[in-house]
Amino acid sequence: MKNYNTLQQLVEIDSPTGYTENACKYIFDLLKSYGYKPEYTNKGAVKCALGKILHWLLQLMLIHWEQLFRE
Image (cartoon, rainbow, N blue to C red; front, side, top):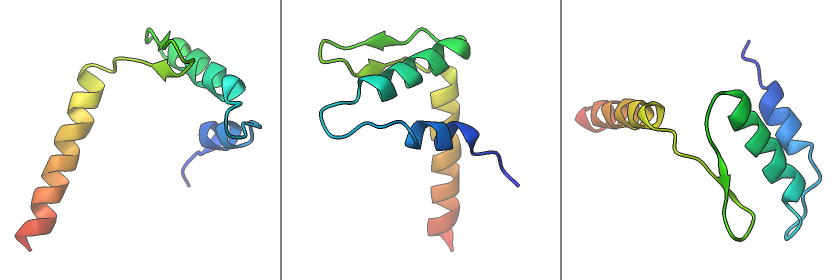
């Protein structure tokens, strides 16, 4: 069984429309704990360069899509 604790913790944060500071802080701190360097935008959103991991994930997605469309 997969572990969805991080997703569960994020979903449980009370963050109605326009009041997402707590959820953003959670994501910011989580990314920092993984060794990334997240930043806040002027409007309080979190942005973070994922570098090679994102590139690798995109490659996997493309490979999967190619396999789907070959059939």
